[in-house]
Image (tube, rainbow over all chains, first blue to last red; front, top):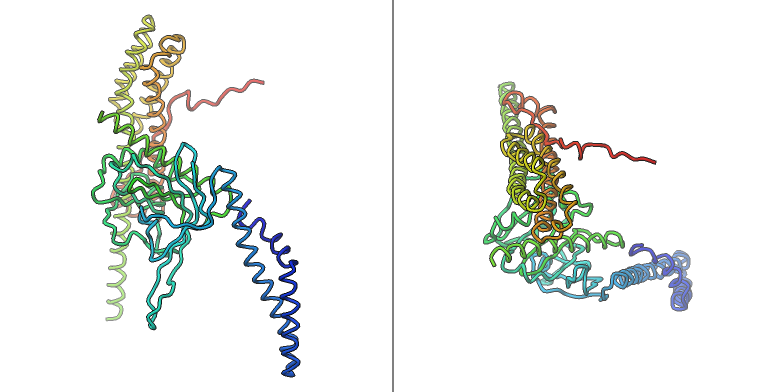
Amino acid sequence: MNADSGQAGLFRSYLASAPAVYAMAFGALAAFTVGAWQGSVPIMLGGPAAIVVAVAGIAWLIADRAAANDFYWGFATSVGLTYANQTSLLALTPLLGAGNRRQVEQWMYGRLPGGLSGGLGQLVWERLQQDSDGGTSVKERNRFSICVVDLDSSLPFFHGIYLHPRRGLFAPYPDWLGRTPTRTLEVESSDFGERYELRIATDQDEIFLRRLLSPTLVSWLAQHPLAPGFELKAGTLCAFVPRPLTDAGNLTYLIDATVHLAGRVRATVEEEQARVA
Amino acid sequence: MVVIIIIAVLVVLLVLIFIGVNNSMIGARNRVDEAWSGIDVQLKRRHDLVPNLVETVKGYATHERETFQKVTEARAEAMKAQGPAQASAAEGRLTAMLGDLRAIAENYPELRATENFQQLSRELTELEDEIQAARRIYNSNVQRYNTRTQQFPTLVVAGLLSFAPRDFFEVESPAERGVPQVAF
């Protein structure tokens, strides 16, 4: 089951609907009439064909969007979340504040496993550029799958952990950390180092962080099929995959990964709180 | 003149490649050492836990003196072990002894019911998971490093600068290595 599952069926039903049939019939007739009036055979033949293709194209686009909405709504219902077509989130972590303009599509929120409060969706963030005529246009658009949970208890201990998939030379998306003051941290695993780059806030307690990054977590991250990145800042954990996830299996994987990470963060914090007490 | 320039460029290129390969080999070796430190930390934590566990079990199973002695000896041996090869064998023995200790504890329901024993068992299980994960990380780093020492062109640098292959941290415990017996 994925976001394209119902696309073909919806397309057929939209194409057979009265508005589409009328649009094609009247559009084709109008194009033919214009062609006949101008005495142009190409317009008489090509015009109706172009109208039919245009209507079919519009029907396909609408069907595509509707199928995606249906899928995400169904998925949200199946995992006990509430579906909202679109939302915007507070820029609590650098990714949630990336780019000049952003929104979250297919937002599903509520209570996640483990009693965590949060949601998941597709974060679309854009970088804009100034045109010569003073207007703005989209320079690049990036689409990430995110799962965000509240972890208020982590606030005093984790000031900023940014685990990003290693971008390499030809990364399809830019580095959104930009001017966020960070330093790089090396982890002992080669597999982990090949897959991720870990940056932390300059005032982050490194020893405490090492407790979170235990061998089991490092090994788990280095072998996870989704290779999820995460950011932990301001009591918010944002796990992400730098591509849109459009099927139930991978979305469930992302939720599970976030819950697992949140569990590790909680356990580390609780251990420290118990030690201090 | 052109020939001299070409030769000079080639020499500079070779030197740069040599430096690059050498640095990457040093990086790989350091990662192996770091990963070994990671294992060492987890093993030390386990060594620290063993006396508490023995004392707790001793309080209930007083006549299992021989097993306690063996566990203590295995722990002492594991603490003395140097490097992956020795540690593999010693830790394997300690794991087997701890298995025996747990088996003894199984016979004492009052012991199993105590909070202290449950806490120690949980910690030991968690530590064993951490040791497994640390071992996976270490072995993966060793494999990468050893592969470099055997592959061309890194093999040339490894040979010239004595980058010796490293030992894996193997499981020596018969219980872990053994094939399960299935009877139909």
